[in-house]
Length: 147
Image (cartoon, rainbow, N blue to C red; front, top):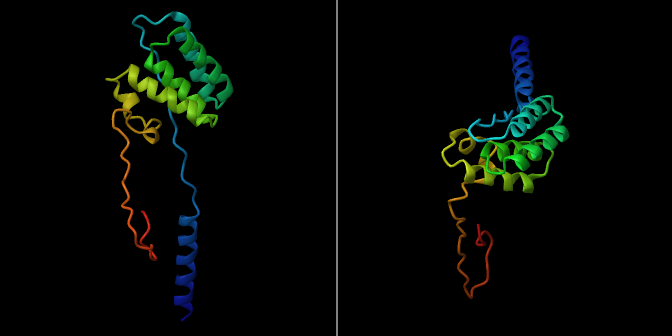
């Protein structure tokens, strides 16, 4: 009987330890700008922004990535990096705009399109589907409302 109690206590402790672990946050990596036609100032700002982002200095990263977007506004990678910094700072609406801009400017870039950072914002080419609810003249019952 004592052995059974010990086994139960050990199982309970192991189970509680497994349930209490926090999920690890996703780590996103800023992208390097493609050299073709991008000004050196944008590349330098991106390198500095990447260093700041990896050091979790998101305000500094935002400043550098914003400079890169200003110098290279047609770079999907620059918009993506700027969106990462905005997202890290909690400015999700501005981040969403720059993630979508990055996807539009770099339609063939699998890194941007397949990024977990972009996935919460959905595919901009797929229209939103709104479910139509039927309205009737009967009174709603328990559990009969829209889902």
